Amino acid sequence: MTKQNHRNSHRTSPIPGWQLGLASLSLGLTIANSNATNLAQGVTAIPPSTSPTKTDPIANPIANPIANQTEDQTASHASREALPPQRLFPVDATWNNSDADTRRRIDDAVRSGYDAISAEGSSDQVLIRQSIRDAFLAECRRAWAESSPTAEPATVDAAVFVWRLLSQRKAGKLPQATGRTPPAPLQDQQRLIAEIASRRAEDEFRESLDRILVDDLGRQRFGEAVRQLSPTEDLDTIRRAALALRKARQLRPELSARLIDWPIEHHSFLWPDLVADLATVPEQPGIYLFRDETGYLYIGEAKNLRARLRTHLEGSDRAALLDYLDRPSTDAIYVDLHVFPSDSPGATLAVRRAYESELIRSRQPRFNLRP
Image 1: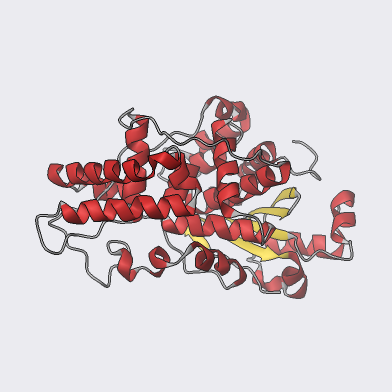
Image 2: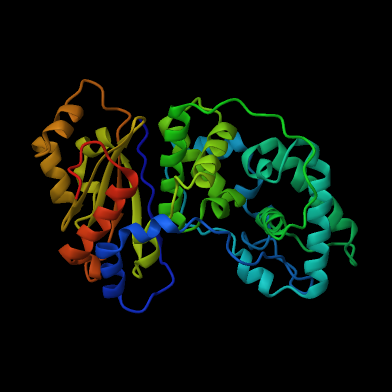
């Protein structure tokens, strides 16, 4: 079975004093329950004065293989080696550098795109259904090119059009959608897959679910996480389930993701691969999460992740987890790692336990003793 090994490092915006973050995690975990995931402010576009080059994979989606892959192609990466670390398209920074005329033309193109798909449902369908997203973007690009004062209009990333669509909806500037066919009821298993895939993508990008599903790379990573859990599940349905969880406030942001101000690497391994070669696990402090298609199984912290996982290999001290790992077939069990730098506050036991407790609270692994 192909090894999954996603190695990506990310940094959040610093918050003065990691001790303040630790105190918030340890004493105020329930604060997160009062905060829903909000859309970020602003949307971005490529200013006409900034002509993207064909060698810039961010400014020019034509040069970015992710932006041109079909959904089936991007989802197939779940069975390949991980892609190099990348970030979501910088919509806010680009929008802030756009002039008033560029922003007006983007908004006009977005409204034209929405008119073309509104008979199929609300703006959420652009996040959910790949065919609707493709139709919306095709019309946006046509209208954008038609409004260009030059023969060769600047390229606008897909994330810009879709994010601006969500911003216009939030501002009440979109007309009522005409096509709202009631979808089929969601199954519990689909909701579970959606929650795990959403958490995996949020761990990697430190962004909201909406922001992730706006972006080509974010959608790809979400699809990879879904395919790990269920190779045959319909991605449109799982995206719909994820948005339903978010709207029902069942996919709240985790405090740990917002208060940590040092870089964290994220790795994902198949359990049989770790059994075969534990040397792939870093000898650094961090958090480890066992999961499979049934949900999160166990979450723990460690000063040395390799040494701690070795104890699970040799005979876990968690009897229920040990019995589960000793089953004849464990091919579908994954171990996710949140790896902290050895010289960061994450090397401190109290910090790791606070981070671990927050993940246990929000993800509810079945074999953990509740903190």
